[in-house]
Length: 124
Image (tube, rainbow, N blue to C red):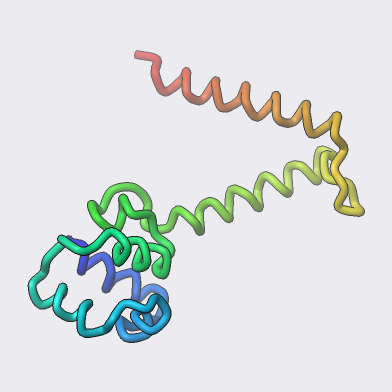
């Protein structure tokens, strides 16, 4: 799968088109079609960044097919889970304010948990 296959796949997933992407990003449609015709992965950095941003993917995924095709959606899920956990622990109060002491404890717990996960991954 090359960059153009990844673009097409993500456009389908989003229910969008190349023309809509070009209109939203300011990339000339004729320029995009020329890249497709040549199947050239040598596009300007600015063009690649605009496409990745529009598609909601990382540049790493767009250009090399590595990493997650949906890091921003996954980050939103992680953020929502953290917010729920913080509310359950009383870090975020019902009025939306933050209990600073509980927040500090939560950050220490989160850091130690992350360190344990990394350590477990490096054990033989």
